[in-house]
Image 1: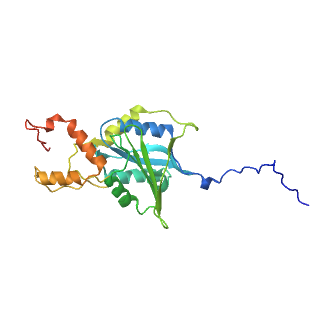
Image 2: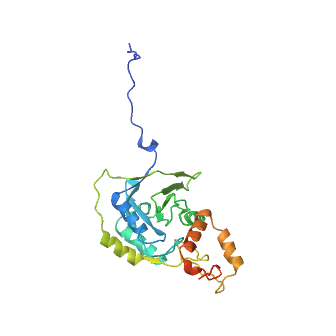
Image 3: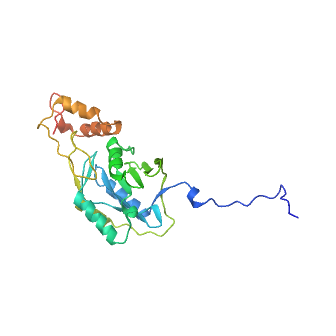
Length: 251
């Protein structure tokens, strides 16, 4: 004889399997603090890699940078520096999915939306990885995190972002962070003809010393809205670019 379940009895609530829980990109407080520190050192973009736990590939324990040339709208990593960084991580016993799957970078403005160049770079550099994350942090703290899968049918999802204060974490190391910033970050003036290639050398642009107004306008119109806003803000904050007749003087 089986015992019937009465209406007053409630079925036991089972915990959802881990695989069915929503994915979240989490940062240790130390990694998050360092990312904010680098973002706020200047008025340029900053790029780097998220180093994760071996058993939790969406938990960023460290934010690491390499030598790079940066402007208000672009990043270019030094090829040799990237190779050296990869070698150090392998020597430390980490697997590639722990140190070269999460691309972290900042925007100097409020927008955290990836630019068209960000998206193109993400496809070009990470398109052969099984998965990768494109993360952008804006000046006001807004974030964009996209997890993309490149196996099977592929696909992409947007991830919520959290700073995890539940586990013990190391304190800040401002002196070391400042030294790393000064060693790796080289700020350059931004021009309409600056080519953004975060994972490769900046392409030399063969142009005249003073580009024509048609070239200037074509370059401006080819940008997305966020990039155009950065340009307008940059010009507005640099009155030395204007002559007495209120014409733009290109560098």
